[in-house]
Each structure stands twice: as C-alpha cells, then as structure tokens.
Image 1: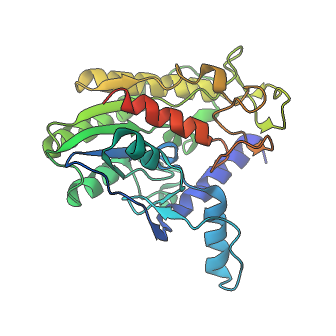
Image 2 (image 1 turned 180 degrees about the vertical axis):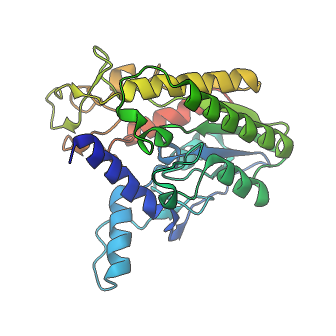
Length: 300
C-alpha cells in the first residue's frame, strides 16, 4: 500500500471515532456573548490515543485505560483536554462552544460518505438547533476543507487548480455563512487557513518524522501544498463574499512547520519522538493550538 493510501486510511479510521464522546467539555465563562467554532479535526483537536483507547475498551471492556478520557465538544465529537476551544475561552474570556468534528467535510465525500456524517452544513444545524448560534454570538471561526481532498484522492495530485471543486466548496461556505448570519446576525465570521505544514524552502516537501533535536529530513508532500493553496483561496474568497475576516494561519507558523528543527514544529509529524505535545499525528502540537487561539483572539 502506498504512503498516500496509508495516510488516507489512518485519517479515515480516526474519523470513525468522531461520535464516540465520553466526558463533558467545560464551557462556562463570564459574559453573555459566546464564540462558536466550526470545522474539522484541526479545530476539534481530538486525542488520537484516547480515541484508540475508546475503541479498545468498547471491544474489550476489561482493557486498561492508557490515555486520557476523551472529551466531548458541543457537537458531540471527541476533543483533547487542550483543544482550541478551551484555550480560546481562557484567553478571550468568552464562552466558547466547539461544534467542530474530526473528519468533517464541506461537500459529500463520494468514496467515504459512510465514515463521515458531519458536513459543515450539519454542524451549523447542530449549533442553530442548540441555540449556540444566537444574536449574542460574537464570532464564528471556521476551518475546514482538507478532508474533501483526501477523501476524493485529489490531495495526492500535483494539479494546482480544481475549478469544479472550488465552486462546490464555495457554494457550501456561502450557504453556511448565510445560515449563520440568520441565526447570529452580530457575529464576526472568521475564515481560517491551515497552519504551515510543508517545508518553507520547498513547499512540495514535508517532514513525516521528527526525532530529538535533529532537523527532520524533507520528504515528498504528495501534493499537500496544492491542496492548502486551494483551501486558502476558498477561505479567503468566502470571507470576501460574505463580509468576513480571513485569517491566514500559515503566516504565523512559517518557522514552525513539520520541518522545523528541534522542538520548534507546531505541527506534528506522522511519527514524533522530540517530546512535543501533540494530540494527533499530522495535527497541531499544544504550541500550535495556543497560537491558533491567540490569532483568533486578536481578530475578535
């Protein structure tokens, strides 16, 4: 099996656990206004080991607990104890309700629809039905898009453009923005890009393994940068069309990609032994989570 297919399978398996939540997430903060998070695993920040432990204990009830208990986002999806929502709530002083979900997509994923019941439109519906999106909502940060690529196989292409996909994604973002505006007319829409994952000196390369203080070796990125560039266009154009704010997370993470030396990477590799805290492979470390929360707070 190719590395690309292995990675696709890994993320797909993790997405299966997106409904298996156990413990409640703290969501109390002073003030009447709130912030509602929407998106995929980069915003939900699930704990990979906790998800694995959940599945093992579900199959073998007497199995020991070797990872933290899985937290639950407002969406009912798993989150880590150090997720974007909890850090943002601490920094901003606002109640943050995390409606993001691991594996979430913008549009239907024809190859794996059975693994992902959580499209953006579904998450918006949950937030509206629960009353989380309301006239007192201050902001709605949205980060989504990469799952649409890997689930259709497009992420492994080196083609720099995909007009049909971008049009479909744009329509879904516009629909979400319209529904959010109806429920939360005073909310600021913040459309985020993903942080920098690829090597700064060669955007077609990534670093899949971080070990100790050594600089990781650049290895092929399988078209990830093309996918990220397309998502940047999707998010920035959606912000422009819908009167929102575009937050380019790559700008604040250029020196902290998967290829950053030592412990400077704010995105983990597929394998990481350098001691950085990361809840999930190929996702943000705790430093990356903190940075995203800080960047969002600066734009409230």
